[in-house]
Amino acid sequence: MTEKKRLSPEEFLQFNEEILGLVKTDTPLPEGLKRFGMELNKGTLKNAVENVHQGMKRGLDLSEAVRGAGKAFDPYYVGLLRAGEAAGSLDEILYQSLREAKSRIRFHQSLKMVTMYPMILGIFCLAVIIFILVYVVPGIDEIFSRLGAYLPAPTQFMVDLSDIFIHKTWIPLLITGLLIFIYEWGKSSARGRYLWEVFLLSCPVTRELASNYFIETFTRSLGNLLRAGAPMDEALALTRENIRPGPGRGLVERMQRAIEKGNPLSSTLKKGSPLLSNSLCWMLSLAEQRGSLDGTLLEIAEITEGRRESVYQRFVALLEPMLILLLGIIIGFMVVCFYLPYFMIPMVIG
Image 1 (tube, one colour):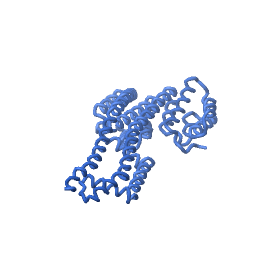
Image 2 (cartoon, helix red, strand yellow):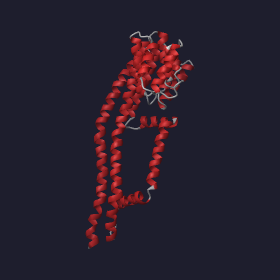
Image 3 (cartoon, rainbow, N blue to C red):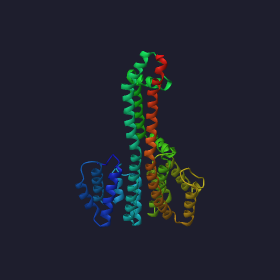
């Protein structure tokens, strides 16, 4: 029975590491996969390994057996294995795929770390604000209502907000439900994933990290396929499948159409792209003319991976003080809102 669910990045890494180990040690793949599958607990990875094992028992090549495992593996990986088998460099292809998988996991972990801290701090801050609005602000409002005092605009804003949370609870609940729906839609739909990628590439906070990840994925994927001997049009088609939906995939599609029309890759690069710098386009065009495109792509991937790690470290170093400053501004505003009415007490009493 073919697997209908895609392997997670961690599961794919585990599978690729096992296959690379079997190939490096000249262990028969069917026997090695059988033993590997027996060690796994029930789940997507175990099903995928068993499907690949059954395919190889029937005499299929590794790439065909992987393709027959259903949606567990993406078309890019199947094409990479097929090209490696044809070129007799399966171990090198598996090693490069392993590095790519590790890089992808590090990137997703970076994004999680970047978003987790603000999320936790935001939830804590929101909980404190709700507590103050529900239990503290009504008491202040009651005191000054008895005195007949006029509340300053910032304090009145807090009172109105408190009234919404206490007497119109459906409004914050509706907003919360809407945000959850938008999140789930963005995570599950193709359009949502496309808009999320556009946001990452447009937001000043994540732009450099996301653009470096695209360059690294594009250059490493295309470089691996070309080095394995895949034709340029097929290599671009498979690279496109390995790029997340967004402007980056659109750029690769334009390259693919140019190649299919008989034009060189440089014809697309010369038009420029916000995702690729002018110097990078020039390097790729020059490498294409010299016939060393695969090596140049892989070298760029290595450089970009190091640059992305540096960007991430720099961003994390700046994130904490920025969030502390933002939290200080919010708390300062609330303190001002609470203390402003007390300056009006002498005028009310007088």
